[in-house]
Image 1: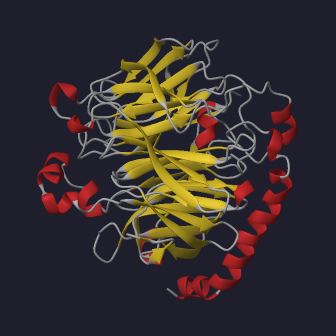
Image 2: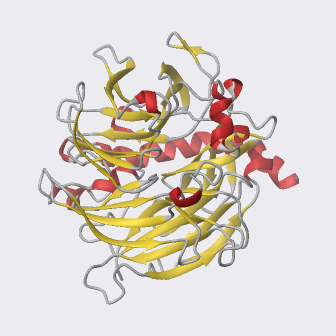
Image 3: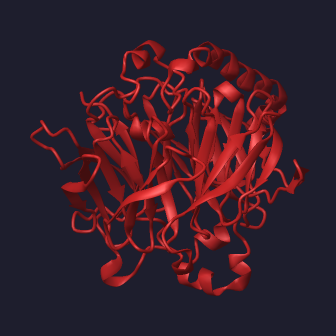
Length: 459
């Protein structure tokens, strides 16, 4: 307890240094943004400039712009953060590593599996800024696991377990892990007080020490009252902006989905806002009205195209977030995903590097959609394919030619019976059709429910 007080006692000084340091370090990179593709990663500028303008960074676009060592060619491994299933294998949450190099003898096979010794609702993860370590979080017990994926990418090792997230910050459900230089921002879904949706963002250093918590606003900013809910985080350093989105609290996400949908009060407890933050001061400046639980946020940073998109889970819409000439940010409903009356439940999205394409997975109907974003004010769906009985995360390869899909959303939200497919599926994409490459049945392999994915290069 004394250590926690000491950390909090240094919070104001540490937070000022942390954000200031991150911005100062980013400034050198941000100057070169005029020639960087849509993903806007603020590292390896020289390498990025050597790539064709139309090159697709794909899943790299959902990483923090401060992450180094971008994968420039064929990814070597896909790491899958996987929920344990009682009675299946060891029953633990685990990081599963799959060899995805088509020239490898173990292509399409599991080559590593690191269990964490318990089930805590494995969900999302994120690299540290040097890309050596993956931080992976649990939504139930709020534990955070740090894996070394830099030393031997094909054989990750668990090196640290962080257990002070909930008691130290008062937050529950670490969801988004977003790297700053030497730091990790963690967006949460809930709180220790009532397990509701009011939450915040925690700031850690790369050694795993909690520095400070920031509350998501509930006051009126820019004419909209905040609901305090959280979900994803995404930074645009060139605009000195952090965006956060919103979902629901622990009382909802740890409950059976069918029960939630039938409970009118529970359905009222979903986020309807996004927040615009000043990245340098880390103060909220605007609250945007985005009804229907806006989830993943993806920036397009092509010069003069500093806009972002998100998808709303409950209303099945694509929203565009952009700044006007006066510097004010706004959010606009620009497209419909599937049939909203059937609640297809858009979950994950992935934007192409040139900002002209967007993959969208809809969980309930098991469909993968592709939208043309050439005109971001009027996205058009140009392709769709049923890729499973349920689909969740979607990750593209660096060159945009490969697409990976996982199936699990939440343990209590996944489908039952024969529709409870649990898989990693890989597809080749030629711009016209998703062609199956390989698949791994995680239930047959006794691995659990596969959720989030991250790439590392081959050795």
